[in-house]
Amino acid sequence: MKAEPAHQIRLLDLQETDSRLDQLAYRARNLPEIAELQRLDTRIGELHDQLAATATELSDLDREQSKAEADVDQVRVRAERDTKRLDAGHVSSPKELEGLQSEIASLQRRQSELEEIVLEIMERREAAEARDTGLRKELEAAQAEREDAEERRSSAMVEIDADRSSAARRRERILAEIPEDLLGLYVKLRDQHSGVGAAALRYGRCEGCKLALSTAEIGQIRQASADEVLRCEECRRILVRTDESGF
Ligand SMILES: [Zn+2]
Image (cartoon, rainbow, N blue to C red):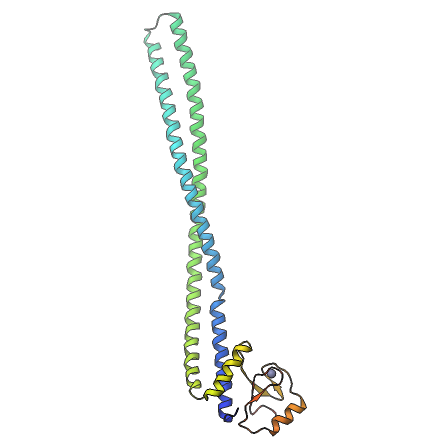
C-alpha cells in the first residue's frame, strides 16, 4: 500500500487521539466513585430494611404494652371494688370475708406480675428506640456520604466529557486528512492489536511492540520509498517513519 509520508504521520496523530479516547472511556468506567456509590447504595438499602424491621418491632411492642396495661387496669379495678366492699363493712359472714380477702390478695399478686410485664415491655421498647435512633443516624451519615461521592463522580464525569468532546473533534479533523484505504487498514489492525494499529518507528524500534528491528529489516526499510506503507515484522502494525526513526 502507498500513502504520502504526511498522511502516514497524520495516522500517528489519529492513533494518539484514539488512545486518548480509549483512556478516557476506561477512566469513566473505572472511577473509584462508582464502586463507592455501589457500596453506599447497598449499605443504605440494608439500613432501610433494618429500620423497617425496627418500626414493626416498635409497633408490636406498643400493642403489647397497651394490652398489658389494660390487663393491669382490669385487675386493679377489680381489687379496688373488692377493697371498697370490704371497707364498707357490708360483708359480715366470716366465710365470705375470708373469700374476699383472699381474692384481694390474689388480685394484688396478679397486678404486680402484670406490672412486671409492662416494665419488661417498656425496657424492650427503650432498647428498640435506641436502635432506631442509631440506625437513623447511620442512614443520615451514609446518605451524606453518598451525596458527596455523587458530586465527586459527576464533576469527574464533566471533566472527562469535556476531554472526550475535544478529542472527538480533533479526531474528526484528522480523519478528513487520511486516505480511505490507509484508514481501513489502521481500523482493522487497531481492532486486532488491542487498540493500537499504527506505531512510530523510533530509533530502530517499533513503538507498538517495543522491539528493535533486525538489521535485515532496517536494510529493507532504507530501500523502501517514502510513500510505502510499512508493517512491523514482529507485531504487524503499520510502522510509520518519523524524524526520530534514526535513519
Ligand atoms: Zn511492532
